[in-house]
Image (tube, helix red, strand yellow):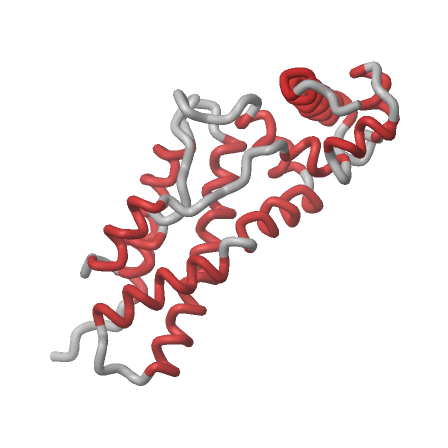
Length: 204
């Protein structure tokens, strides 16, 4: 018999909370599915009905996604390309953050495996991000070589992934309580400084 929707959601939340608590207590390598099942009072079969791996239970149900409103603004903007692109991935504010979000960021920053998995989640947006960036480049530089535009879109998408990793690391280490959206704004400022300092000097 199929479980009622509310009961299934409650079990999912209980598994996620237990996974985060136990990972914080034992470390990522010390966490096992058996420990999670024992804490929640469920069988392994029930666990795997909700999550394919312990990594997925720690990372939770929230997935990075493209902000559709930001994407529409980005396509017709003529501002700095890479800095503007940082607004494409939605960044949760303190009021709208998923449950245990900061605890998860701490775990991600402490585990190369979880960092890789989180970047894989962001990586699933690559095709969508490249398409949006390419639309912006086509709008901004319609006379350019299409192959060159494709190469530029690919480069911006890769640089954007690195910027997102930097924001996640900063959020996990922050002790000031700043939300991820505020940290993303600071990261955009830092990126603007780096780009300005990397520009070739003006010719006399």
